[in-house]
Image (cartoon, rainbow, N blue to C red; front, side, top):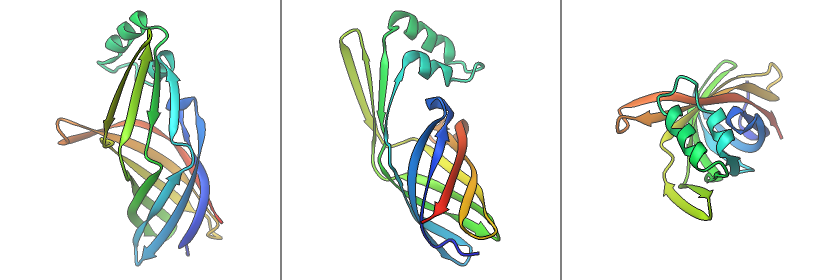
Length: 170
């Protein structure tokens, strides 16, 4: 199975109302080792406080705090800007593909509410793992992605978001 080359496609994000985010990838393989780069064609996202809350798991201990924030700032808007470029590293075995996506750069998050604005900038504190299957004719990859957030000063990771993706050979 041959996957070296240019691919285009999209991932679907449930925290963004299943928005389709176009992506481009360049994949390289040496043995079972997969490396490459990915470009997110859309890297800026705007959400209302209600949309942010709808993406928080109902059993999250932070949900009451977010609801209190929303009651005090019902017009709050979050704009997140992710780095467009990322590095990929992982493995391919037969038709199974698994790689981690690591953003190259910093992320900014800006909250706007009641004529106030605050912005934070930091390196993304999470890992995105893509797992998928290469089609029999090596023209398409379909699968799932999962975001694992770091906690306890990076000692642990927990799943915070997931969705589907697809890529097709250019």
